[in-house]
Length: 188
Image (tube, rainbow, N blue to C red; front, side, top):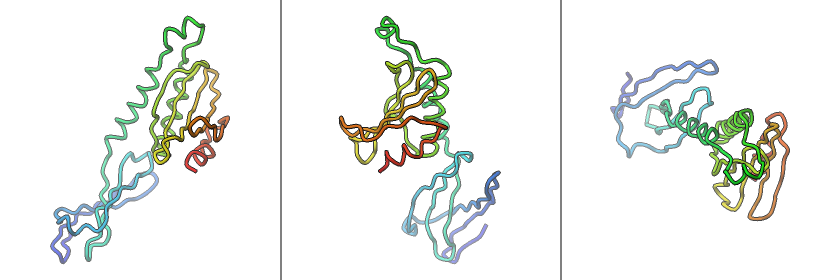
């Protein structure tokens, strides 16, 4: 425990992960008016944690607080349930359309997890597709008219379409699970 000249008590721990060494400093007592800035940085997914910068305090430097983020696991379970619960509407079954198969559901989960882990986006909708697979879409948080739609077919082909209103801005056939061009276009 270290005391600053302002009287703040700071406790510091080293936290080692397979990929990095982090230092955790926790301010035991501090008045809110001494916090100059506050923001969150998301760590690599293997940590499943959040670093929160509490602020800069005289003679103490920047203080980081490393905390486990239980919302990460809750969110992943929710995403898994969204995909697992996808079922074909009864009217489509009578038309001869196929239910999304287990491989399609697994591939859809992997894609949704990847986009959540790497880009921190959550699907607006997850549903069965009329083209024998699973459809999910994302809305641009800045431009609500801009939508990213992804479809995973039962044969595990994957396609993505970015639209703005009724206009298709870009379309992609996804290969090798590379979503970089899709996300670059979606965020443009």
